[in-house]
Structure formats: structure tokens, C-alpha cells
Amino acid sequence: MKGVNAMLEPGMMVRHPAAPDWGLGQVQSRIGYRITVNFENAGKVVVNGLEVELEPIFEQDS
Image (tube, rainbow, N blue to C red; front, side, top):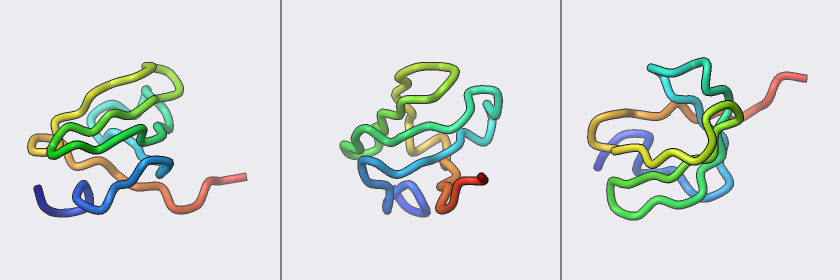
């Protein structure tokens, strides 16, 4: 795995680029290419990091 997904760690906030309606998600774990994220509006989702590059959110809007 390369790109941004390779640096994701538990606790980091992300968005799924193809599913903006899922809202913000918090990374729960990253094991190999499988990234488990708990999204505000979609619940827990396991993302295939080889197919989807999640967008990290470094600052949240007030």
C-alpha cells in the first residue's frame, strides 16, 4: 500500500472521497490494506486501501 493510506493510524480523522454523505470517520485500525473506519453516518466500515485512498482531515472546522 502506498500514498496517504500507508500513514493512517488509529484515531486519525478521514473522509471517504466517494461517499461524502458518510461524514467524518475515525480510523479504528489499519492491518495491511484493510482499514477499519467508524463513520458518523455509516457506522463501522472496512475499507480496501488498495482501491480507495481516504482523505485525512488534519483540522476540524469549528
